[in-house]
Amino acid sequence: MRIYSTETVEKVDEEVELAGWVDARRDHGKLIFIDLRDKNGIVQLVFNAKDEKLWKIAEELRPEWVIRVKGKSAKRPDNMVNDELPTGKVEIAVSELDILSRSETPPFPLDTDGYDIDEEVRLKYRYLDLRRRRLQQNLRIRSKLVNEMRKALFEEGFTEIETPLLTKSTPEGSRDFIVPSRLNPGKFYALPQSPQQYKQLLMVAGFERYFQIARAVRDEDLRADRGFEHTQVDIEASFLNRDDFMKIDEGIIVKAVEALGYRFKDKPFPVFTYDEAMEKFGSDKFDLRTPEEKKNGALAFAWVVDFPFFEKTDDGKWTFTHNPFSMPKEEFLQSLLDGKNIEKILTTQYDMVCNGLEVGGGSIRAHRPEILRAVFKVMGYEDEMIDEQFGHMLEAFKYGAPPHGGTAHGVERLVMALTGEEYLREVQAFPQSSSGRTSVMDAPSEVDKKQLDELGLELKKTKKK
Ligand code: ASP
Image (cartoon, rainbow, N blue to C red; front, side, top):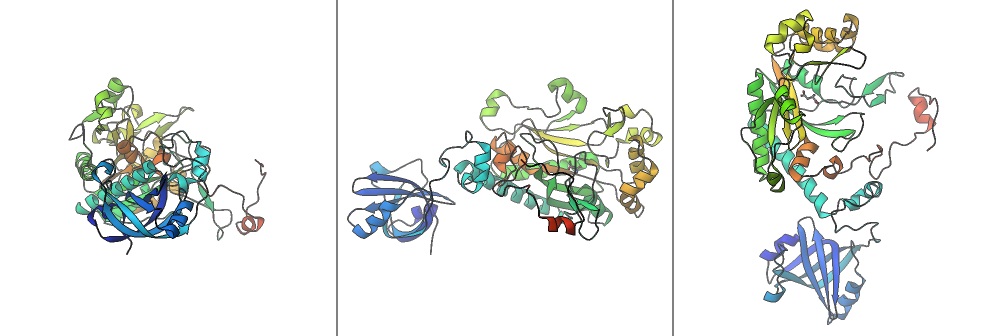
């Protein structure tokens, strides 16, 4: 049976079978050395000119070809040991070689970190780009982080529940991606900006502790740490006040991140009010690391609390700063219900920052219908509009809604903090380009007239690019 490259060191003097990609080839007269790459790493293969038949096939091998070999795992002579390679003490004296698949010369080098390669080309050939060690590592760290968070959440008694992708437009503050409905011509679903309302409904349903590794889709301006799609570890819990929730959430992050072997600058995480943060750092996404700590990979997590609930829009109306479903801090509840001193109202919102990135944010929610209604009133919504858009939440809250709150952690931003990557695309398998096109598949693309007809849609004007 085939084994992985890293296992060859435990199989000295044994016959082994390996498979993978040709990472590099070195010709040394009567010997050809091939670095064979698999998911675990690299091991050196040796072909000897004495075996003519094998030599002939080996001579053909080029980088990125896929091969299977059998041979003996042999100790290298002392002066040939490569200490930089985990398998550097051995090499495989090949006796059988199968070429499983050939490769054209890749459009860009795969043995570099790849930062200098044009983004569009990297994304067009993302399946090759992903072969580079840096991206392999980033995606494996991501997978481990999600696994550890999931484990920590299960240990705290959370239940993993999925919520719909085809849903209703919600006011998370971004533009929706909308999906036309064939069965209801002229009507549209929206892809979820977050599972916010569903997770609150799950609290009404009595689950008490919910989480989901949720995809969130937002049609907003793309930035280094922002794409159309991202993944959230989305959490909600009942019967906890703000400080209790923050403690549980911090515990989950600490457990998961420590399991991956990272170090924290401060634990417990320091807490700053929004005013303190703005005064001290001029930003609510600050970086607490010293220049020295930036080099040694420390993680400087912190909390920000006591944000203003509302801010003025350009046209002079009030809008929410974070989340319309939040509860104000208790001492401001009456002001909210009375619609007075709006600018002074502070919310129960808590943001988590790490190394200058916002890596989480949530709040305790308004679980009584009159409080939620008051929030929308402040924002200038008429009763009719509130009922039309949020009637389902107000209705649900009439049936014994427990006090509840939660948060969402951006998986990509957490992984960016762990790996030191500056761009979201370096920690996603198939990201969109900065012009909003998908990797490899080249969407968005046109659809045929039949599809449009079925949906009852007609295009006003199609701009050819
Ligand atoms: N729904 C919020 C968001 O996606 C997070 C939360 O308040 O739980 O930003």
